[in-house]
Image (cartoon, rainbow over all chains, first blue to last red; front, side, top):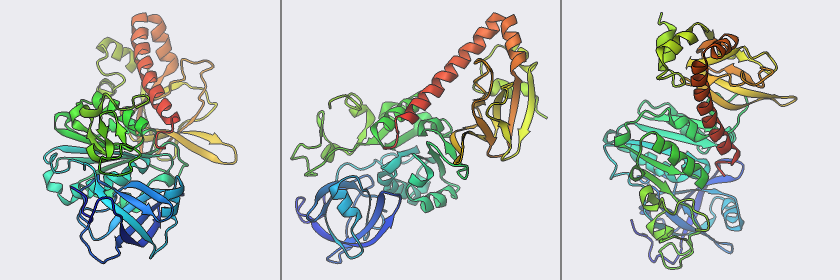
Length: 279
Length: 150
């Protein structure tokens, strides 16, 4: 899906409708077009360039529902000047948006398969649109399992939604944290440890991963141990995207431009470059 | 009631074990059930048992003075608890508390060690599985230390 704003390098103004604090440093913003138009079409896994006026521009995955394009949702962690400026926006604040950019999750191509969604930390944000799609087209897929790990229970994104998803009969949700107080009654340990509990048929399964590189590396090892092949694993890569359209070269990763060839890659195509030093 | 033999034979730790060895293990085995909140073992207690979990979940915790317990891992069906019984002075270093109704087969460590010493082939087989399990635990621990989600 190509950028559906007037020109890919010109930011379109969007207005902040709602800001929700997810964790101590992460916020979810609901945006609508300043012009009032409601036609922001995107595919799960794509990203936008968000422009905080006077601060700069950053690539942020879209974390909302692709079936509700009238509201653009982004979950942003406050980690630098630009993201801090975005996280400090209030209702009615204005932000520039370019996008959507990039290769999405292959949600339609994998219909008929069992699907494992595996997220670590902020990685649930780019996977959430894929889960929305899978649940809206539930009959087209086999079993669907979501594995989500974070440092502590307080660091889990979208807790109310996780609770709702856990109550569904057609979705298995596995949560885990690195450490927890005694009120936490779910799993403690790294996300790779709970993957062995998944119920899937390896030849007919597709895994979609998003999280820090080290988490994805260990998760891929575990999935392959469980019988998945490299071509059944998709991952979303994070790089310093600038132009978003494969021109500037900032996000070059070996032979790829992450903004254009990714951020979602099939693992067998990138395994020689994945977690390689100095790449 | 299901006998312990098929439960042990199906458990990942003992899967594929020669039936002669399984019989030796059964001589040291008994069933136990823990209700939610009940401790399977506590820090400083003598480590006399090795728990093979076949139903339920257990939180492994470290108690911190003034701040209370913190769970560092959870174990469930198909996992085992009690890896310090080769390490003198055979005392637990952690607490383990049932999160759900938990059913285990508990193995008497003294009894197991005695059989290992009597039959070195059996001892080697048990040690081999123990070493593999430790390797998996170490890998998970290293990943946990790497701050996986940042």
